[in-house]
Amino acid sequence: MANEQILHVKDSYYFEVPKWLWRADYSSHSEFPDVWVRLDPDFQQWEAKEFHRGMKFDQKIQNMPSEEEFLDSFSAWQHAPENHGRPVKRYVSFLQDEKTPDGKDAHPWVDSTASSLVLSRINTTEYSPLTNGEWSADKIAGYNNALSGKILIPQPLGTLRNLYQKESGFAISRFMVIEMFVAVIMLAVFILYARKVKGGQPTRGRFWNLIDVFVLFIRDQVVRPSIGHGSDKFLPFLLTIFFFVLGCNLFGMLPWMGSPTGSIAVTITLAIATLGIGLIYGALKFGPIGVWLNLIPGMDVPPTVAIIVKPMLFVIEIMGLFIKHTVLGVRLLFNMLVGHIVLLAIMELGVHAQGGIWFVAAPIALVGSILISMLELFVAFLQAYIFVLLASLFVGASTHHH
Image (cartoon, rainbow, N blue to C red; front, side):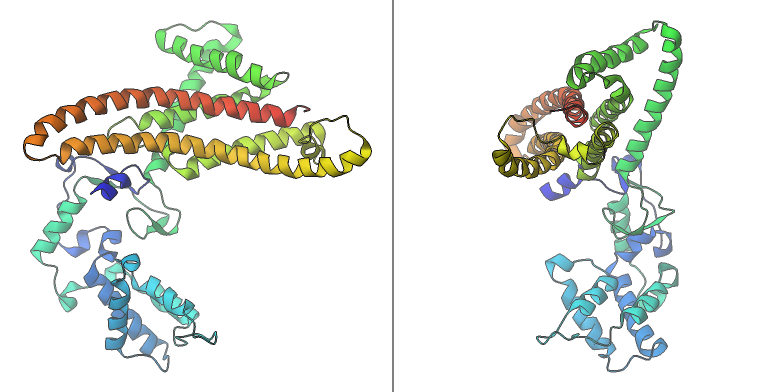
């Protein structure tokens, strides 16, 4: 149960809401989402049969195992914990990679070109439970219960392996939707904000004054002191970083959403963007070579010592540059992720308590969840501030002489 709960803070290809808000009511296999049908054991057995038939008759592959032998070996492979639920396509890849002790292909009949051609022709629309055993009412009811509360995101450009992993193409995840929503909100708000302050006019209204407070604080207390001369040209980028991180953090406080900054892909991308801005503007100022040489601090040492010391410092500074930006992304990730995991642990204390312990555990879980949520709200603002502060320091270091 704990592992299932931790999945809720991961990215996924669906939004989860209470089951009563989004009831799945499919009546046959053809109505279920394609990704769900592909995970069905009966479909995977049918898929394996179709693959064997296609290889044997369409491709006329010789020295193949019999259908029974192939299906038995496929089932045995699936019974391994790391292969549970994996389709025949993954099994074929496994067979193609398996080697004999002398380095030859263990299964030469699994030709990669022929296998890909056969697998590409197998799809859910050709699957008919009438020839493989109709799905029982209990199975359909169980699948409906499992899918209730899960709002699957349409995937026009990609194919899913399951609800947490993509198979191919460009798959749209929950965090992508949230990030796009945050970006649209930022675009709308700051277009209006720019119009209001155009020409140096003061803002009017509580909301716009609040935005003004954040903008002026980041400009006067973070960016200018950290970067110094020429800092204003980096202000649009750093303000975008601040409000984007803040918006993503705050979405993690909303029910059934999630925080995109709890994904390593998001935080590392922000760190790489910061690194890129620093190196690009450093190269414009010092030249493509000078930006790297600028990493070496100025030292008044004899030439004989400099020949030894400076190359060592250069290597250390290069490593430090990439390590600092990696840590910039990782620290944001863990600060956001750990808070959600702690909150889930406290909530489970009340959910899973039984008997007389429930009367003690439930109030503790309720109060603890409220307190942790308040702390999470504070951390959402704090981590956005720290991220943009460190980003400003790193950009300043890349665009100024040491």
